[in-house]
Length: 465
Image (cartoon, rainbow, N blue to C red; front, side):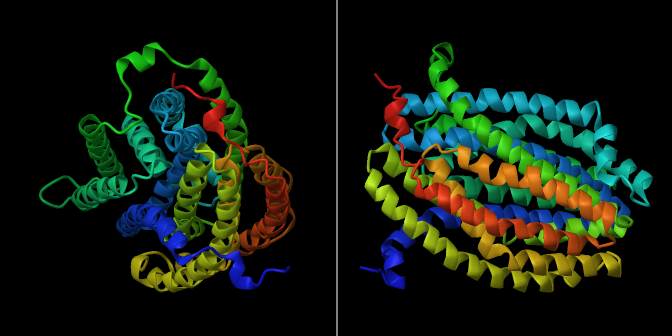
């Protein structure tokens, strides 16, 4: 018997429980992105070139953030399932994996910031008419941001682990505190308020480091006092479960490859967009992403809710329930994506308010980009839901099949072709290349039908005696 439209959705109580997980995650990201927008507003007051210098550094930091998030997601697959199986030792070992892998990333990040910032940032402005001026400010900003590495490690690993066991409100509260600290010190340092020196671009970096440090200290204090199930003891480091680490790495490397290919594709395309003009193009494109991040919060919400709900079911052995709720979640993502399109279109009104100090061409580019990104939201929300389903059960191959191949074989060659063989502007280039998302949804759907993701990883990797 053929199901009607409403049969594809779960009960209201299910979506309520999903929103109880997703909304605090989205609220946390929204607050962080609002502060980022305020940062951009403050830096934009310094002019196109200085804003461009900050934003090309931000693109490099974005690469490392993706790397960090991938490690968190790989560990999170196991953390959530161990949580569902009530395996505390498994959760602790997973957290240790995150710390060790994250330390490796921090070492690369700090080396990049302190030793070779000029070589890295120069790649982001090849062909730009004002490359030398932009690089001057970008390098000074990046050298200071290198000190963010260590607090970044602990806040990312603890915050992600709390969300993976369903404690989503604590990271939200801590994030609010950190963002208020960041905003206050931006106001102090960028323009030299309260008798402090006017540091401009360097001031924005100092404010970020102070905020990250405060955030980390609060997270560590919470873990010491509340002792969540993943809180490690010294004895856990002595008895490391290398078999579990190997299994996590087997899942992680595919995710790392696909996510880094995506991040590299985004960075390459951004560099090519930046070559289509001067500082106005760099600042206009960067400003559009600062605004789009306000509705991109949908991705984190749906990924966390999907991972927690399905991971808990899989880890506790409720495989059929997981398959049913997968359908409910993806259909809910369809509706949610449409809603986020309207929210995205509404944010266009912020452009002349927040970025009034940028040049008219920068504002024009920003508005057009926000419009295009809002229209793509239903597709992006849905495919993020698909990836979250596959990863909940450890099917990390799907990400490489879909995202990795699309970026490696279509996006990067396609954007180079448009840059070399056409005179298209950055917005037109972006609009065309992002059409690759539509066939990706079809391929991901075909993979999910094979149900490779329906696996109880907690039982297969049991750590408790």
